[in-house]
Image (cartoon, rainbow, N blue to C red; front, side, top):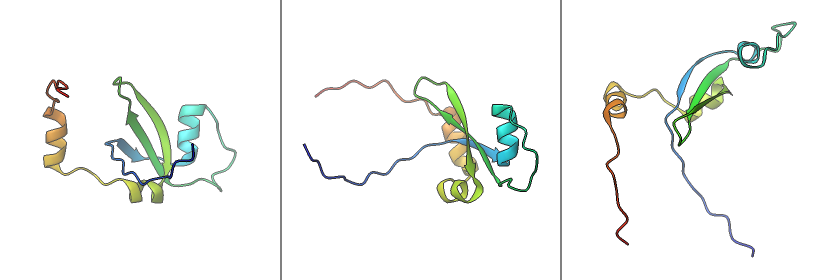
Length: 91
């Protein structure tokens, strides 16, 4: 079956903080680079899984800035207190 690709939009809330690639490699992979010549600015990104575990990743600065913006105070408050209501499928 040859199905046509269709566009999708995805959204997610992540935690992030500035961290260079070399810092990330050292902290998460115990890799110490011999030089900072090729170090790259970026962000540590913490993703949440559906089972409420998390995983850490790294993103280049420009990629991160193009994908994410900091939540407003009101949005952050909403995320902290919002708990989805139990739903039932009545189909």
